[in-house]
Image (cartoon, rainbow, N blue to C red):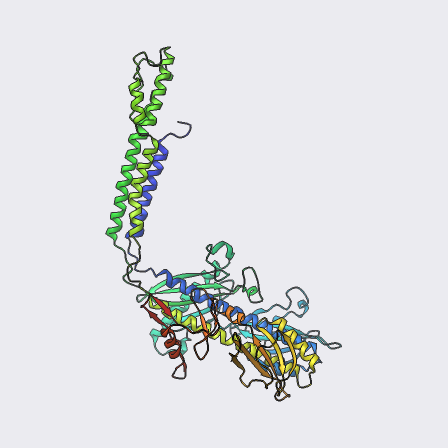
Length: 627
């Protein structure tokens, strides 16, 4: 017993654990928690930041892909003057703040458009190395950050040229709503760009300037914390089964001001699939979205209730420990002393028999050993180990019963606690912030779909510009095949003349009927097939009536709708028929709910200069947040 530490340490450890649990119960259940925000609200801020990270990553990667594809198509044709290259790119894309063409060998600037580019940040001697053409961030003299994207222009018997484009780290189409700000953060925690926080010189009152100063300081604090947290591997920080965003993301809380607490979500730019990197993810950028949320003063707990629960646990623990001391510790210590007496040769006095089953059996064994040592019969010599005593021992309760009794006592305290404490009431309180976030996130997703379709149409315009008026069917097919390989958004690409005849085609067979001229609308929906067909059209300059036509894959549209926390998402046409969704659906089926039809009808109405997103909480038939 001494070698194993005896019986006292386990009971002492149990006593300490019960005391710690009682203290934790008093502090966690009995303390006032007015400053805590609902976890659903914090999770919503995390999803908001994830939306921003997805949108920024897609925008940056799209910019790199567009410049690379344009340079490759230029290089595949006849040599083009630098000014003509920039003019053609600028006529199709308006995403870059500045563009330039530089001769790599001499470093001479051949042409430039837009803002002046910091070309000295590009080391021309390392362009041929690994990652030499990777996008890079540079800081301008005014402190703003620009992303430089590089591509090569190569023609036979011509000096190799470098095509450079600069863009700002701004969020494309993020709906911030009221009093929300969002920032792009570098790997060291530096805020590279912000949206939503006005400049101090734009404000008229000292109070607003103080608020902006406080928000800027809080956002910088969130940025430093988020940069540290996003350095971890997503596999080590994401909870099993959390799914959704493939990168590192989370939420933070800040200071309280006038009853409102600053809350933020953060998310690091990650690829479309776990473990898949892109040009944008190599920049090690993090998105932080911050807003002030009104605290719910009813989110408090009763300190007296916490003390009562802790006191009850102390009483139950004291009863369990007393039971163990009386039925286990004391009998075993007594038997230990009896065994020491026998080893000293004191064999005259019989061994005292405890009441407990196991302790009684041990005592009987010791007494038999005492009798054997005295060379007595097993039942003789006045030993108390009589048949009656052994019979009574069989009826005594053992250690299993004792453990079961102690377990029942502890469960009698914790089971009712788990069933009664922290349970949702009959009416669920849905914070208004969730409705607002659902509305703004839906508006952001709406803009993402719009941009994706517009970018697809802009790609076709670029393709038409690169074809030119003299391209033959072989050249057209070559350009279409190259575009189809670069962009997976298209199911088929083809060129139609004014009569509707197909001059070149790549990909699947066109699903929209031919025989007519190209559509006048840049993006249109054809609903005459079994499934929706979204068609983009771009006229070829110099060839009146001839246009490049692309049919989008519906799977591409559905992939844009996969956003955690938004629930069931649908894209509907003007007749409120479903043409895309993030879950199972039947093409052109209705919404099946008058409330949804009414909300869609209301969102199509203009309020002021533009349509406004809407969000509502429906209580009938269960709580539903719809945007």
